[in-house]
Image 1 (cartoon, helix red, strand yellow):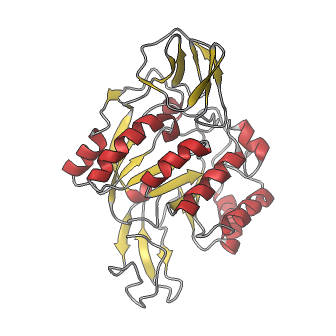
Image 2 (tube, rainbow, N blue to C red; image 1 turned 45 degrees about the vertical axis):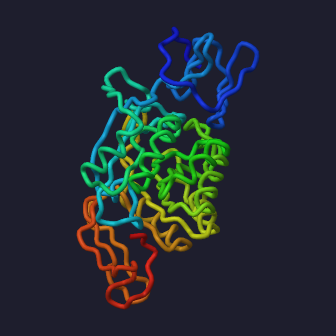
Length: 337
């Protein structure tokens, strides 16, 4: 834990209990036990003496942007639409290759802007943006704010998307599930030790993905292929076998790694990316490559026509009828409009 002086509390945390003079966080499987003045591994939940566990990032936004929904990435959900992406700071993992490490680490260089739980709905509605994603940092550690924002988004009939590492305990996840329309979960490895190395827990992430799928949330998964961490083909094959057991089977995005933060291995080779794509396609119906040039298209399984053509994380052509079927042969597609 990180010892630090008391800071002004932003709002009380919802998932914790007292254990003597300490506070036990119950948001994620780390279950941080914090003495007064200590901060959890997420860097944003603090035990304030005389108050209890508080969240220092409540209503503090680090980033807000309008993106193509494909950038999340979501390829089978509302293609060709925009999404309002909002993030804060903090993360409950510690990946050495993190692309958003300044947000995850709560770097002093990050500028934070205070927002109200009504603001995501207001901004999306005023700008006619059809959906909102909580993303950039790990949204699980911003959960109190997200849950407070969701009723306002529901009033405006704006769907909520979560881009997450899946490191959340069952009780808070149960509260979140009814509020979600779609999610992309990072499935970072399929080995317990690899997950421990990254500061996570494989079984928790698997359980979260299963809960999302079973509840009916549209789920896509992302696997960042990192040399030296998760590049064992046998391990990856076991991952695809597990994903294929889910119903419906989630989309899998296999993304190319580039050096960042503390991990200095060379970028994922295109040959390795292609090998892993071949392994995935043996069991999974919908597999896409990410962080590469060129098109990444969804093809009709019946007639072979391009249902959606994409380039540079944006849809450039959509060939679906109003019911989401192939416009050429009218075969049902897996895409949610």
